[in-house]
Length: 303
Image (cartoon, rainbow, N blue to C red):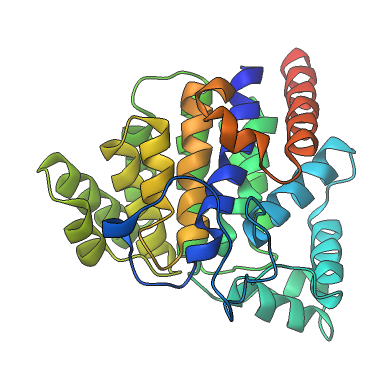
């Protein structure tokens, strides 16, 4: 299980870094290139080097560090997020995260979330899927953390769906995608329907470029999560999944994050291309964090 937890966190960061230069761009499936690269001049991420990640991995690391240090509370998470935002070190942050941080300067931390359906609620949820042997407890904690920035019920449903996908992948359960689909359908009719339709398009053999147009690729969780499900089912080869996710346009950093997280959770660390791991920003730090999260999981399992 440790290799899957390491794979999950590393895969998420790899997918994020691959998608970083293409965030907010048009789809580029006809001119895909394998590997990391820099964003074009004038892009919000153009200060980042090839192999660096965005705010998605930053928030994952933030939550994982608080959990590993035994200091996590929703209020501490909010305060730490606010500090990153105030120092202007969050990398092209999700608009709803920015709005919530702005609210934090005049409101209480636990009353600052915005009623938003952007996908920025998903990356901070990842460590909870790894740290808790009880999926219900992990989901509950992740939803509460989500509420620091996102209060919309659909955001909570998306977090629950993402937790379900990763939890069952890490625990080697049959068909985690189907279990996550069922969770989405139980939690939010619209989200469940959109994921179902995305998987139907994949099963029908719809070309990926056509699927991107029909499903969408924007920052809404109603598009980001379904297109990630489509790609996860379509591409079994790790390099293909990661490369295509990085070139679908729109919310490529988060789409890549979701696909990479699932890849690592389902196939383990060794499934991630070695050259991508070697050039990933903070690879060793993320791997150590995954080990520490595994230690938390083990202690909780024993008690």
